[in-house]
Length: 236
Ligand code: AMP
Image (cartoon, rainbow, N blue to C red):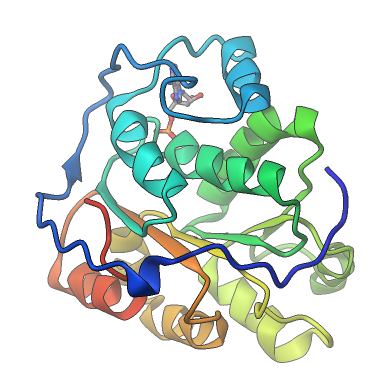
């Protein structure tokens, strides 16, 4: 994947008037008969999925990916094991393949372990198409991470606390080019008291032109508040 400008914005979700109120996507680990090609994903990504031995899409993938490819925000009720990581990684990689942009994707997740797992899936699916990712979590040298951020990866996978640390202390680092945001395990992030950090991050991400997906195992009142603050007319 080559370098390119970072200011492109294809989202039209601000002007979307569809007000369908279907219930949130509810998933188990079950699979559908939909192939990744059926969902409209780029051939290179379909090949990556085949190489991983993924024959058909899981329920959350079959439900979320078509909305995402339309540029819609997403809210998904999904647990670990449902295939939710690929449900947000595949559309982000698809978008990057169409228009490569540095510092384009941001995935926020509550723990270091989850961040590393997400990074592994991005590399497994997107490594062959040249996507560059960086994982920003606590417990690792700030300077080393600052250097990785200065190289301008396509996707940042981060825990909220350490990302805010970089926003405050890393010269030249900003999130103003982010075009896709994922809030993974939103209920856990909020129960771990990351609300303030999430608000700090949401404040510096472009309001227009950024597509947001929120995934949560449960729908709590705090998640609903975050949903209202971050999503525009989401596909559910
Ligand atoms: P996740 O729910 O994202 O933690 O994914 C759980 C596991 O399912 C991961 O190990 C993925 O590699 C695997 N996986 C994701 N999507 C598929 C699929 N469509 N078919 C088979 N395995 C999958």
